[in-house]
Image 1 (spheres, rainbow, N blue to C red):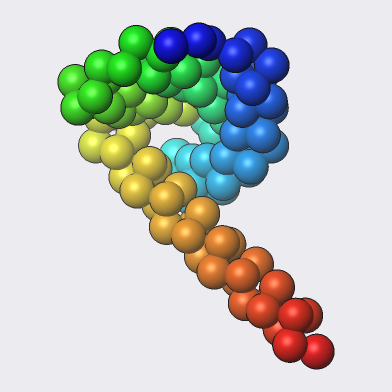
Image 2 (cartoon, helix red, strand yellow; image 1 turned 135 degrees about the horizontal axis):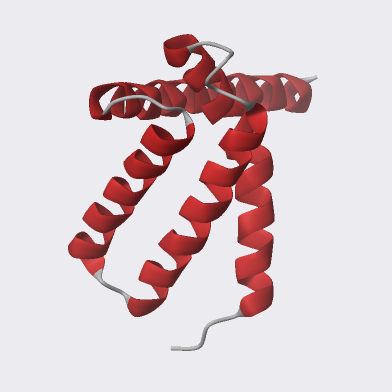
Length: 115
């Protein structure tokens, strides 16, 4: 299995652009604006994506997914200076916000396509 560095770099950039604002909003909702900085959200996404890509390259399956989840929660806990439960809550809220934004964008796309 080959590891494509260009595809990986594009993945890191796209994930950073898409996930950082969502994670930042979620973090601000739980820990406030003093602890949840946008630059911290960017670092969480970059480091999480890189580590996730490394585990994905080795194809660890379920064990790799669990390790990735722990890594993401640890990054959120560290950068947003919160506990494990808040870290998990920030993650859940980020997923919900991401889904809502995706649905809204899909509806806008469908509306534009129909017109």
